[in-house]
Length: 500
Image 1 (cartoon, one colour):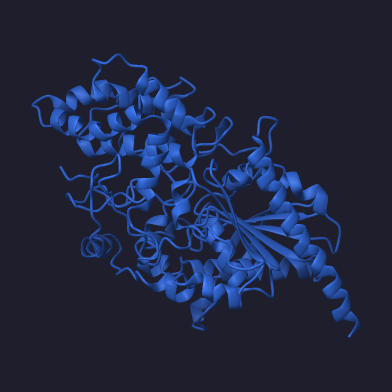
Image 2: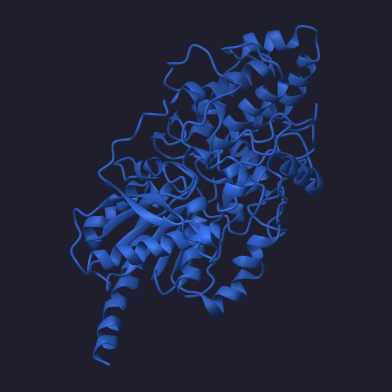
């Protein structure tokens, strides 16, 4: 058994069938699929105050081959309740999944829409949700998936926004883009690439520096571990020691059968990897969504769920096994509602339409990760050679590990953006392990880093509640104030331009 589960992306299970490797599982920023979501029906849709539209989108924005002009219908959501012609347009740059999911979990825009009289638009990312360029054959091969990348997605947003403004007879409306996680990366990159379309961007929990060697490869899992260590040193040590205990049990003759019973698996387990992934996912996602109030983003969870997990582990008598303790803790993530009689540790469905990320991770979104000695996870290395071989075997393509930093930059970003960028807010919470790959210091007077010590993964985008702590209220207040400043500057500039 390798130190880490034998796959690259347990959230998408892209390489779950590969032989043992020394590469660490890579959890992609933001909403990401894992087996825990298997109980959510695919057909269930969140109730959100948006009207659904479909835009005739161009397949390929960057070539003029005959099939480049093929049209597919891109889904987008609109709320115009507070808007009037000429008022701002707030656009959410869609992530790797169904757009309704992101709209339902970005109540911040609905909260601030009345103040700005803003039109709210959520655009679904190509190859996700219903926005499939080749219908149910979109994931068929590299021939179709070759049109799935961040540059095409940004061009989609640009074309749709321009068309929308034209159709609304509101060409003068200022546009601000918003995004969380991968969507936050897209929002920041959109402002850099299309400054003539968006006057500013709010990029929440956007790890745009998680590429190449800009950020230490062990930083993500070190941060997850630090969250648990801060909650309880004993909790951290129990989790850290549980992997060896699991491996020893699985090596016994009836070890997997016993693990199937201990973990209340719906079907008998065939590999220890599925148990590792199940636990690994629970601890990582809980650290990411360690929100200060109850939430139902990845799963229903209490306020500060990391602390709640550690309280469970610390509550066992001294003679209890580490396996029993970590199972009980992970059950908080998978079964806080106490509705589950068994757990589907293997072969869960894709509840939110996220599997396109497999392709993106094997082409341009190469984020190397390792586990250090300080991590509560087993130590591991990253092998680009093995990673590339896995991608070639799965898709027949070779990753381009340096393409993102070539296309969008990243190295010495402070020097670059200070001279070439403006009007971007990078918001990060240090409880979120993805914060280590984010922009954590101000770059200029108009490229601002808002960092909160207790913040989790794009917590600022969640709907305001009466239980929100003061630091979260202050964070949102600062974001609104900065955006207001952009808009206040825009209209006088527009008026002067029209007079000239």
